[in-house]
Image 1 (tube, rainbow, N blue to C red):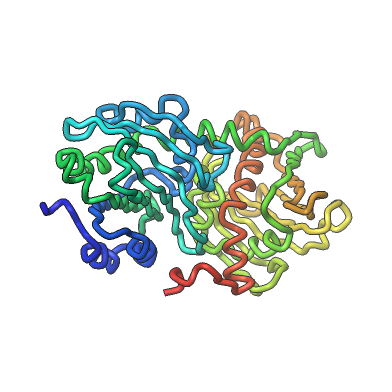
Image 2 (image 1 turned 90 degrees about the horizontal axis):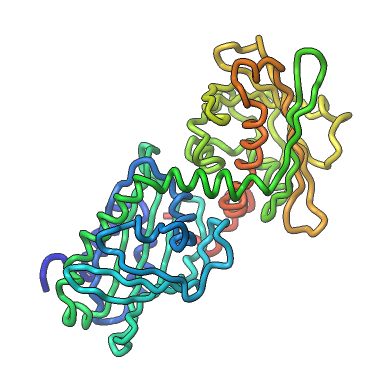
Length: 405
Protein backbone atom coordinates (compact mmCIF):
# COMPACT_ATOMS: atom_id res chain seq x y z
CA UNK A 1 0.00 0.00 0.00
CA UNK A 2 1.54 3.32 -1.05
CA UNK A 3 2.17 6.17 1.38
CA UNK A 4 -0.91 8.20 0.40
CA UNK A 5 -3.20 5.53 1.83
CA UNK A 6 -3.73 5.77 5.55
CA UNK A 7 -5.49 3.42 7.93
CA UNK A 8 -6.90 3.67 11.41
CA UNK A 9 -3.51 3.86 13.07
CA UNK A 10 -2.73 7.04 11.13
CA UNK A 11 -6.06 8.54 12.15
CA UNK A 12 -5.23 7.78 15.75
CA UNK A 13 -1.95 9.68 15.44
CA UNK A 14 -3.70 12.62 13.82
CA UNK A 15 -6.28 12.63 16.60
CA UNK A 16 -3.61 13.84 18.99
CA UNK A 17 -2.80 16.99 17.02
CA UNK A 18 -6.05 18.40 15.61
CA UNK A 19 -8.40 20.81 17.41
CA UNK A 20 -11.38 18.56 16.75
CA UNK A 21 -9.54 15.36 17.58
CA UNK A 22 -12.32 13.84 19.66
CA UNK A 23 -14.70 13.65 16.73
CA UNK A 24 -12.38 11.41 14.71
CA UNK A 25 -13.22 8.58 17.07
CA UNK A 26 -16.71 8.57 15.58
CA UNK A 27 -15.22 7.94 12.15
CA UNK A 28 -12.95 5.19 13.40
CA UNK A 29 -15.72 3.31 15.14
CA UNK A 30 -18.05 3.50 12.15
CA UNK A 31 -15.54 2.35 9.54
CA UNK A 32 -16.06 -0.99 7.91
CA UNK A 33 -13.16 -3.41 7.59
CA UNK A 34 -11.02 -3.19 4.47
CA UNK A 35 -11.26 0.56 4.16
CA UNK A 36 -8.80 2.86 2.42
CA UNK A 37 -8.60 6.10 4.39
CA UNK A 38 -7.27 9.39 3.05
CA UNK A 39 -6.98 12.46 5.28
CA UNK A 40 -6.28 16.02 4.12
CA UNK A 41 -5.76 18.89 6.58
CA UNK A 42 -5.86 22.53 5.48
CA UNK A 43 -6.17 26.09 6.72
CA UNK A 44 -8.45 28.23 4.55
CA UNK A 45 -8.15 31.99 4.77
CA UNK A 46 -11.08 34.41 4.71
CA UNK A 47 -13.76 31.79 5.35
CA UNK A 48 -15.99 31.14 8.34
CA UNK A 49 -17.45 27.75 9.32
CA UNK A 50 -20.95 29.13 8.69
CA UNK A 51 -20.02 29.59 5.05
CA UNK A 52 -19.24 25.90 4.67
CA UNK A 53 -22.43 25.03 6.57
CA UNK A 54 -24.34 26.91 3.89
CA UNK A 55 -22.26 25.55 1.02
CA UNK A 56 -23.27 21.90 1.39
CA UNK A 57 -26.94 22.61 0.63
CA UNK A 58 -26.17 24.97 -2.25
CA UNK A 59 -23.83 22.95 -4.44
CA UNK A 60 -26.41 22.63 -7.19
CA UNK A 61 -27.06 26.32 -7.83
CA UNK A 62 -25.45 28.87 -10.11
CA UNK A 63 -22.82 26.50 -11.47
CA UNK A 64 -21.23 26.21 -8.01
CA UNK A 65 -20.17 22.59 -8.41
CA UNK A 66 -18.29 23.34 -11.61
CA UNK A 67 -16.67 26.45 -10.09
CA UNK A 68 -15.54 24.39 -7.10
CA UNK A 69 -13.06 22.47 -9.28
CA UNK A 70 -13.39 23.11 -13.03
CA UNK A 71 -10.67 20.60 -13.93
CA UNK A 72 -12.11 17.61 -12.05
CA UNK A 73 -15.86 18.22 -11.88
CA UNK A 74 -17.84 16.71 -14.71
CA UNK A 75 -21.49 16.57 -13.58
CA UNK A 76 -23.72 17.17 -10.55
CA UNK A 77 -27.36 16.62 -9.72
CA UNK A 78 -29.48 16.21 -6.62
CA UNK A 79 -31.21 12.85 -6.45
CA UNK A 80 -32.81 14.06 -3.23
CA UNK A 81 -32.51 17.83 -2.94
CA UNK A 82 -32.27 19.64 0.41
CA UNK A 83 -35.65 20.82 1.65
CA UNK A 84 -34.20 24.33 1.93
CA UNK A 85 -31.14 26.14 0.65
CA UNK A 86 -31.67 28.89 3.19
CA UNK A 87 -30.61 27.08 6.35
CA UNK A 88 -27.20 26.33 7.77
CA UNK A 89 -28.16 22.93 9.16
CA UNK A 90 -27.12 19.82 7.24
CA UNK A 91 -30.01 18.54 5.11
CA UNK A 92 -29.96 14.97 6.44
CA UNK A 93 -31.13 12.56 3.73
CA UNK A 94 -30.14 14.75 0.79
CA UNK A 95 -28.42 12.76 -1.94
CA UNK A 96 -26.08 14.13 -4.58
CA UNK A 97 -24.97 12.30 -7.70
CA UNK A 98 -21.60 13.48 -8.98
CA UNK A 99 -19.12 12.57 -11.67
CA UNK A 100 -15.42 13.34 -11.19
CA UNK A 101 -12.41 12.95 -13.44
CA UNK A 102 -9.39 12.11 -11.30
CA UNK A 103 -6.13 10.59 -12.45
CA UNK A 104 -7.52 10.18 -15.94
CA UNK A 105 -10.46 8.14 -14.64
CA UNK A 106 -14.05 9.37 -14.91
CA UNK A 107 -16.16 7.83 -12.15
CA UNK A 108 -19.71 8.35 -10.91
CA UNK A 109 -20.45 8.37 -7.17
CA UNK A 110 -23.24 9.31 -4.79
CA UNK A 111 -23.15 11.00 -1.38
CA UNK A 112 -26.03 10.77 1.07
CA UNK A 113 -25.94 13.29 3.92
CA UNK A 114 -26.04 11.64 7.35
CA UNK A 115 -26.91 13.02 10.77
CA UNK A 116 -23.71 14.83 11.84
CA UNK A 117 -24.32 14.37 15.57
CA UNK A 118 -24.94 16.76 18.43
CA UNK A 119 -23.53 20.27 18.10
CA UNK A 120 -21.26 21.15 21.01
CA UNK A 121 -20.28 24.55 22.35
CA UNK A 122 -16.85 24.16 20.78
CA UNK A 123 -16.77 25.13 17.13
CA UNK A 124 -17.38 21.62 15.90
CA UNK A 125 -18.87 22.00 12.46
CA UNK A 126 -19.09 18.95 10.24
CA UNK A 127 -20.63 17.19 7.31
CA UNK A 128 -20.84 13.40 7.18
CA UNK A 129 -21.98 11.57 4.05
CA UNK A 130 -22.25 7.95 2.99
CA UNK A 131 -20.26 7.33 -0.18
CA UNK A 132 -21.35 4.78 -2.81
CA UNK A 133 -20.39 3.97 -6.39
CA UNK A 134 -23.25 3.06 -8.77
CA UNK A 135 -22.32 0.02 -10.83
CA UNK A 136 -19.91 -1.16 -8.13
CA UNK A 137 -22.37 -2.06 -5.39
CA UNK A 138 -20.40 -5.19 -4.48
CA UNK A 139 -17.62 -2.99 -3.11
CA UNK A 140 -19.84 -1.69 -0.31
CA UNK A 141 -20.03 1.89 0.91
CA UNK A 142 -17.59 4.39 2.28
CA UNK A 143 -17.73 7.61 4.26
CA UNK A 144 -16.82 11.23 3.54
CA UNK A 145 -16.41 13.58 6.45
CA UNK A 146 -15.53 17.26 6.73
CA UNK A 147 -14.60 18.54 10.20
CA UNK A 148 -13.90 22.25 10.50
CA UNK A 149 -13.44 24.97 13.06
CA UNK A 150 -12.14 28.52 13.32
CA UNK A 151 -8.39 28.92 13.11
CA UNK A 152 -6.61 30.07 16.23
CA UNK A 153 -6.06 33.53 14.73
CA UNK A 154 -9.72 33.83 13.83
CA UNK A 155 -8.92 34.78 10.23
CA UNK A 156 -10.02 31.58 8.58
CA UNK A 157 -10.87 27.99 9.31
CA UNK A 158 -9.11 24.71 9.88
CA UNK A 159 -10.49 21.86 7.81
CA UNK A 160 -9.94 18.12 7.93
CA UNK A 161 -11.37 16.09 5.08
CA UNK A 162 -11.55 12.31 5.55
CA UNK A 163 -12.38 9.84 2.81
CA UNK A 164 -12.94 6.22 3.90
CA UNK A 165 -13.40 4.06 0.82
CA UNK A 166 -13.70 0.36 0.07
CA UNK A 167 -10.27 -1.14 -0.59
CA UNK A 168 -11.60 -2.68 -3.76
CA UNK A 169 -11.92 0.76 -5.29
CA UNK A 170 -8.18 1.33 -5.05
CA UNK A 171 -7.61 -1.98 -6.77
CA UNK A 172 -9.99 -1.12 -9.61
CA UNK A 173 -8.98 2.53 -10.01
CA UNK A 174 -5.58 3.12 -8.37
CA UNK A 175 -4.93 6.36 -10.29
CA UNK A 176 -8.31 7.76 -9.21
CA UNK A 177 -7.65 7.06 -5.53
CA UNK A 178 -4.07 8.33 -5.73
CA UNK A 179 -5.31 11.64 -7.19
CA UNK A 180 -7.95 12.13 -4.49
CA UNK A 181 -5.76 13.87 -1.91
CA UNK A 182 -4.56 16.56 -4.33
CA UNK A 183 -8.12 16.96 -5.62
CA UNK A 184 -9.50 17.62 -2.14
CA UNK A 185 -6.81 20.17 -1.36
CA UNK A 186 -7.24 22.06 -4.65
CA UNK A 187 -11.04 22.09 -4.39
CA UNK A 188 -11.11 23.57 -0.90
CA UNK A 189 -8.41 26.13 -1.71
CA UNK A 190 -10.52 27.25 -4.67
CA UNK A 191 -13.45 27.98 -2.35
CA UNK A 192 -11.45 30.87 -0.93
CA UNK A 193 -11.86 32.73 -4.22
CA UNK A 194 -15.65 32.96 -4.24
CA UNK A 195 -17.49 31.36 -1.30
CA UNK A 196 -17.34 34.43 0.97
CA UNK A 197 -18.87 36.71 -1.64
CA UNK A 198 -21.58 34.23 -2.60
CA UNK A 199 -22.49 33.61 1.05
CA UNK A 200 -22.84 37.35 1.63
CA UNK A 201 -24.95 37.95 -1.47
CA UNK A 202 -27.16 34.87 -1.49
CA UNK A 203 -27.57 34.11 2.20
CA UNK A 204 -26.84 37.18 4.31
CA UNK A 205 -28.53 39.65 1.96
CA UNK A 206 -31.03 37.66 -0.11
CA UNK A 207 -32.14 34.88 2.24
CA UNK A 208 -32.09 36.60 5.64
CA UNK A 209 -33.51 40.04 4.89
CA UNK A 210 -37.07 38.87 4.02
CA UNK A 211 -37.34 37.40 7.53
CA UNK A 212 -37.89 40.84 9.04
CA UNK A 213 -38.84 44.43 8.24
CA UNK A 214 -37.79 47.88 9.34
CA UNK A 215 -38.97 51.46 9.16
CA UNK A 216 -37.16 54.76 9.66
CA UNK A 217 -39.17 57.45 11.47
CA UNK A 218 -38.41 60.97 12.76
CA UNK A 219 -37.76 61.39 16.48
CA UNK A 220 -37.39 65.06 17.40
CA UNK A 221 -35.13 67.59 15.72
CA UNK A 222 -31.81 65.84 16.09
CA UNK A 223 -32.56 62.11 16.00
CA UNK A 224 -34.42 59.46 14.07
CA UNK A 225 -35.52 55.95 14.96
CA UNK A 226 -34.84 52.75 13.06
CA UNK A 227 -37.50 50.25 14.16
CA UNK A 228 -36.98 46.59 13.24
CA UNK A 229 -39.67 43.91 13.59
CA UNK A 230 -39.03 40.22 13.06
CA UNK A 231 -39.93 36.69 14.08
CA UNK A 232 -37.04 34.37 14.94
CA UNK A 233 -37.75 30.65 15.07
CA UNK A 234 -35.80 28.20 17.20
CA UNK A 235 -34.89 30.33 20.20
CA UNK A 236 -36.67 31.33 23.42
CA UNK A 237 -36.78 34.58 25.42
CA UNK A 238 -34.71 32.90 28.15
CA UNK A 239 -31.94 32.15 25.68
CA UNK A 240 -31.80 35.77 24.59
CA UNK A 241 -31.94 37.00 28.21
CA UNK A 242 -28.87 34.88 28.90
CA UNK A 243 -27.05 35.75 25.66
CA UNK A 244 -26.55 39.46 26.40
CA UNK A 245 -24.14 38.74 29.28
CA UNK A 246 -22.50 35.73 27.63
CA UNK A 247 -21.33 36.96 24.24
CA UNK A 248 -17.87 36.95 25.84
CA UNK A 249 -15.50 36.32 22.91
CA UNK A 250 -14.74 37.58 19.44
CA UNK A 251 -15.48 34.15 18.04
CA UNK A 252 -18.97 34.13 19.50
CA UNK A 253 -19.50 37.67 18.32
CA UNK A 254 -18.48 36.72 14.80
CA UNK A 255 -20.87 33.78 14.89
CA UNK A 256 -23.64 36.29 15.57
CA UNK A 257 -22.92 37.94 12.21
CA UNK A 258 -20.03 36.22 10.38
CA UNK A 259 -19.54 38.85 7.69
CA UNK A 260 -20.07 42.08 9.66
CA UNK A 261 -18.79 41.48 13.19
CA UNK A 262 -15.05 41.97 13.66
CA UNK A 263 -14.10 41.91 17.35
CA UNK A 264 -15.56 41.85 20.86
CA UNK A 265 -14.36 42.50 24.39
CA UNK A 266 -15.77 43.50 27.77
CA UNK A 267 -14.60 46.87 29.08
CA UNK A 268 -16.68 46.23 32.20
CA UNK A 269 -17.61 42.54 32.46
CA UNK A 270 -21.09 41.42 33.53
CA UNK A 271 -21.55 41.01 37.27
CA UNK A 272 -24.04 38.13 37.01
CA UNK A 273 -23.58 36.26 33.73
CA UNK A 274 -25.09 33.08 35.18
CA UNK A 275 -28.54 34.65 35.55
CA UNK A 276 -31.38 35.27 33.12
CA UNK A 277 -31.19 39.04 33.43
CA UNK A 278 -28.52 41.28 32.04
CA UNK A 279 -25.99 43.06 34.23
CA UNK A 280 -26.69 46.80 34.37
CA UNK A 281 -23.42 48.70 33.93
CA UNK A 282 -21.64 46.09 31.83
CA UNK A 283 -19.76 47.70 28.93
CA UNK A 284 -18.56 46.03 25.75
CA UNK A 285 -16.20 47.33 23.08
CA UNK A 286 -17.05 45.97 19.65
CA UNK A 287 -15.91 46.55 16.11
CA UNK A 288 -18.44 45.87 13.38
CA UNK A 289 -19.58 46.93 9.95
CA UNK A 290 -22.96 48.55 9.43
CA UNK A 291 -23.19 48.15 5.69
CA UNK A 292 -19.88 49.53 4.37
CA UNK A 293 -19.21 51.59 7.51
CA UNK A 294 -16.78 50.23 10.09
CA UNK A 295 -17.31 51.43 13.66
CA UNK A 296 -15.73 50.96 17.07
CA UNK A 297 -18.58 51.04 19.57
CA UNK A 298 -18.89 51.17 23.34
CA UNK A 299 -22.19 49.57 24.35
CA UNK A 300 -23.38 50.00 27.94
CA UNK A 301 -26.24 48.00 29.50
CA UNK A 302 -28.64 50.46 31.15
CA UNK A 303 -31.31 50.08 33.84
CA UNK A 304 -34.32 48.29 32.30
CA UNK A 305 -36.65 50.71 34.07
CA UNK A 306 -35.59 53.38 31.57
CA UNK A 307 -37.62 51.59 28.90
CA UNK A 308 -40.45 50.27 31.03
CA UNK A 309 -42.98 52.82 29.73
CA UNK A 310 -42.23 52.33 26.04
CA UNK A 311 -41.85 48.56 25.53
CA UNK A 312 -44.74 46.29 24.60
CA UNK A 313 -43.16 42.85 24.88
CA UNK A 314 -42.39 40.94 28.08
CA UNK A 315 -38.58 40.87 27.84
CA UNK A 316 -36.24 43.69 26.93
CA UNK A 317 -32.77 45.16 27.17
CA UNK A 318 -31.90 48.83 26.90
CA UNK A 319 -28.42 50.13 26.14
CA UNK A 320 -26.41 53.23 25.31
CA UNK A 321 -24.12 53.09 22.30
CA UNK A 322 -21.18 55.46 21.83
CA UNK A 323 -18.65 55.75 19.06
CA UNK A 324 -15.40 54.94 20.86
CA UNK A 325 -13.66 57.97 19.41
CA UNK A 326 -16.53 60.29 20.52
CA UNK A 327 -17.54 58.67 23.79
CA UNK A 328 -20.24 60.67 25.54
CA UNK A 329 -20.63 63.17 22.68
CA UNK A 330 -22.98 61.33 20.30
CA UNK A 331 -24.67 58.68 22.44
CA UNK A 332 -27.26 56.49 20.75
CA UNK A 333 -29.95 54.39 22.36
CA UNK A 334 -31.08 50.89 21.54
CA UNK A 335 -33.88 48.72 22.90
CA UNK A 336 -34.40 45.06 22.06
CA UNK A 337 -37.79 43.78 23.22
CA UNK A 338 -39.13 40.28 22.63
CA UNK A 339 -41.48 37.53 23.77
CA UNK A 340 -42.60 34.05 22.74
CA UNK A 341 -44.44 33.98 19.41
CA UNK A 342 -48.01 32.74 19.04
CA UNK A 343 -47.00 29.27 17.89
CA UNK A 344 -44.45 28.78 20.69
CA UNK A 345 -41.60 27.81 18.38
CA UNK A 346 -39.66 31.07 18.52
CA UNK A 347 -39.90 34.73 19.45
CA UNK A 348 -41.22 37.97 18.05
CA UNK A 349 -38.81 40.86 18.46
CA UNK A 350 -38.75 44.60 18.02
CA UNK A 351 -35.48 46.53 18.02
CA UNK A 352 -35.50 50.33 18.24
CA UNK A 353 -32.34 52.29 17.47
CA UNK A 354 -32.31 56.03 18.15
CA UNK A 355 -29.51 57.65 16.13
CA UNK A 356 -28.41 61.19 15.24
CA UNK A 357 -30.23 62.43 12.15
CA UNK A 358 -27.02 63.59 10.47
CA UNK A 359 -25.53 60.06 10.41
CA UNK A 360 -27.16 59.56 7.02
CA UNK A 361 -25.65 62.83 5.76
CA UNK A 362 -22.08 61.74 6.44
CA UNK A 363 -22.73 58.01 5.90
CA UNK A 364 -25.34 57.74 3.11
CA UNK A 365 -27.71 54.82 3.65
CA UNK A 366 -26.59 54.24 7.25
CA UNK A 367 -30.10 53.91 8.70
CA UNK A 368 -31.12 51.40 6.05
CA UNK A 369 -27.95 49.40 6.63
CA UNK A 370 -28.60 49.43 10.38
CA UNK A 371 -32.08 47.98 9.89
CA UNK A 372 -30.73 45.27 7.61
CA UNK A 373 -27.90 44.46 10.00
CA UNK A 374 -30.33 43.94 12.88
CA UNK A 375 -32.37 41.45 10.85
CA UNK A 376 -29.33 39.54 9.67
CA UNK A 377 -27.57 39.12 12.99
CA UNK A 378 -30.61 37.93 14.91
CA UNK A 379 -31.26 35.16 12.42
CA UNK A 380 -27.81 33.69 12.96
CA UNK A 381 -28.61 33.04 16.63
CA UNK A 382 -30.70 29.87 16.09
CA UNK A 383 -27.65 28.21 14.52
CA UNK A 384 -25.73 28.06 17.80
CA UNK A 385 -27.54 29.69 20.73
CA UNK A 386 -29.87 26.77 21.66
CA UNK A 387 -26.93 24.36 22.06
CA UNK A 388 -24.84 26.96 23.88
CA UNK A 389 -27.67 27.78 26.30
CA UNK A 390 -28.38 24.09 26.93
CA UNK A 391 -24.79 23.27 27.75
CA UNK A 392 -23.64 26.39 29.58
CA UNK A 393 -26.76 27.58 31.39
CA UNK A 394 -28.73 24.37 31.80
CA UNK A 395 -25.52 22.32 32.24
CA UNK A 396 -26.93 19.66 29.93
CA UNK A 397 -24.17 18.11 27.84
CA UNK A 398 -26.07 15.05 26.66
CA UNK A 399 -24.69 13.88 23.34
CA UNK A 400 -21.60 16.07 23.66
CA UNK A 401 -19.41 14.02 25.96
CA UNK A 402 -16.64 14.00 23.38
CA UNK A 403 -16.47 17.80 23.55
CA UNK A 404 -15.83 18.01 27.26
CA UNK A 405 -12.27 16.65 27.19
